[in-house]
Image 1: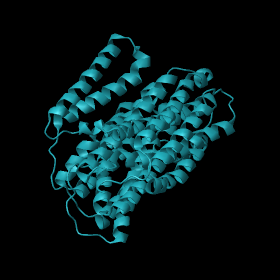
Image 2: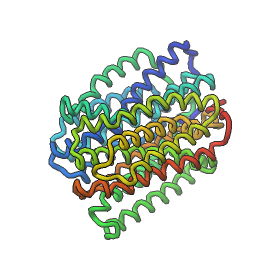
Image 3: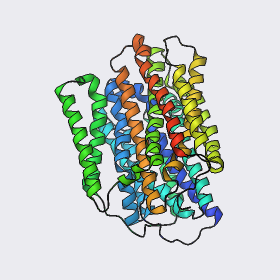
Image 4: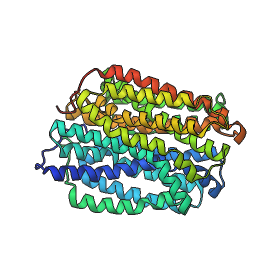
Length: 467
């Protein structure tokens, strides 16, 4: 994302503008898909590489933590060197690292390649949205585009387990990485043909101290969550981890307050709608990723389902997200973000409540109902959260507001994976259902928190960035 004023560009035709959106949304779909497509394959990856569940959490979180850490810095690089150039670089890095994942001979190699994927993905998500915003100067058209954008991202996250299950059943777990190659090649061709170059008029310098401290804080926090069950929550190593997280976060806040051009505009957090939207983004993605990982481990380990059957079980979730995400975008444009957020919170909480008494023989119909409710909640959530975060801000601040919200989503993904994995780490098939119940209570709490986000968002239609 960018905090700079958008550079003036020649007006594009309506057809060209929406083609730019489609091309960028395709790449965004790839980023979201890779956040969740691996979840359903974790047991197969573990068997293939000979590692346990706790270690496998890093396969997912290496990607999401690096992605979260670098989103804002990638936006600054795009402002300076050109958004299309950085976007294309991101596609190349993402594609090459996907190939490295596909041929990984060991867990360490796979985790490193997933981290490299996160580097490439960080150049796609915020930069693509900046390209779209720059291509659509009309506020109303931009609002519709943001709604479509949020819908595509939500759909990609929900579709990951279904796609992953089908690929693993047909071609093995490495196929979830091979599939990225043709998509990346197609995206590179489309970007070269349709996407214009653009830059920020005021290119921001890189805030390297802030970037390093942010990365350290996120990595340390996720490491403690993942490794806590193994090393002990009160062990000296865990206590050192807590101290490192606090020190890095405090140092980051201090550096950002003193910087003339900070990585994050912390002043945005003084706006209640923005602050609650960021926390809401974290909550939504904690709920989604907790649900997906608990679903994968429960169905495959406790009930003996195949990856294909496990992925198919999430079809109601994907269907709910697919139907409700565009509907949510339309509701935001007509009525503002409050009603979609209330719906998102209600459906998510209801889905979590369905499974708080999960047992080894819980009805499949109840499972499918819970996944449908969570998918509907997720579908309604993304567009109003994005709108609430950037509403009323000029482009000079709306860019970084959107980038912080994107970062919050990935932080939520990483935390959800770490928490879910920690709950069931070392638990056998017979105890897995009981061990996962706190996770479903967490999903319920995340849904209820969205009611607070809805209240802070304010009633009625809200203007989009630059309006």
